[in-house]
Figure 1 (cartoon, rainbow, N blue to C red):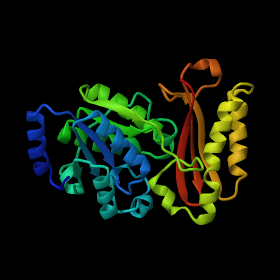
Figure 2 (cartoon, rainbow, N blue to C red; figure 1 turned 135 degrees about the horizontal axis):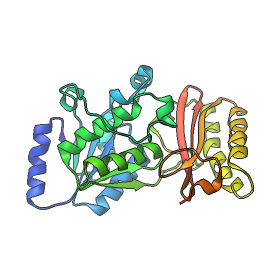
Figure 3 (cartoon, rainbow, N blue to C red; figure 1 turned 90 degrees about the vertical axis):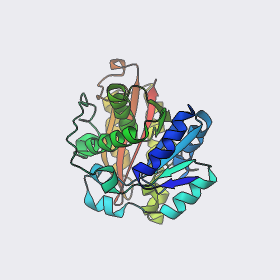
Amino acid sequence: MNIYREISELQKELLEINQKSSSVGFVPTMGALHQGHLALIEKAKQENDFVICSIFVNRIQFNNIEDYEKYPQTENKDIELLKEKNCDIIFIPTEKEIFPNIDNFFFNFENLDKVMEGKFRQGHFSGVVKVVKCFFEIINPDRAYFGEKDFQQLTIIKEFAKQNFPTIEIIACSTVREFDGLAMSSRNVRLTEEERKVAPFIYKTLKRVKEKKINETVNDIKQWVIKEIDSQQFMSLEYFEISSSLTLQPIEKWEDSKNIVACIAVFVGNVRLIDNIIIEN
């Protein structure tokens, strides 16, 4: 396994890989790796000759500077985990290496960024696609792997790649969960012991949403979720939406879409957690 911190050194090896006509899988991360990230590495290893994992905490996608400063930094542990998974290349660039100049790149999100995360985190997805653009230009992988936990981000990146990097296949990977259903996230380590005990209620609620869809209206379920989450100790609902999984636009009636996802963002204490569940596919 090779570790690179400079683009020029990474691209020397990529040139050799390309000359062998070997396939490259790319897993972008912000570090603080957990089993969810490692599942992406495993899938990428199954489908490619070489796998590259990046570790880069992207400051420009944080709309809250305090959240950025609190993001866990566990580089040495991350490297060891990636070694165990036989990751071929780790790329750990500095911000100056990735963003040497002001980037005025503009992407038309087609309203995918106006709802849910985009509504509450101004500029978040602009920061995401800018860093993804940089990594795609540097690495030009055959496939790139993203988790379904960040469903809106995944949808946006699929559209972004379709418009700007049509040769790169975006692979969606199922959300990996703890034994009690809590979606794995680097933020989970910031939960107190008491908060961690109640956090699984988020996914429990989402599963009930899928069950209740049979007999209840979209609006009735949304009101039920608001009451359920806000009645829990340590929990505060930021948003809950039932939307088209293709356009991400909220639906009012079940017949409005054949592809439906329920997405949620909840503060558990001071820690913001997101999750989702596919209602119809």
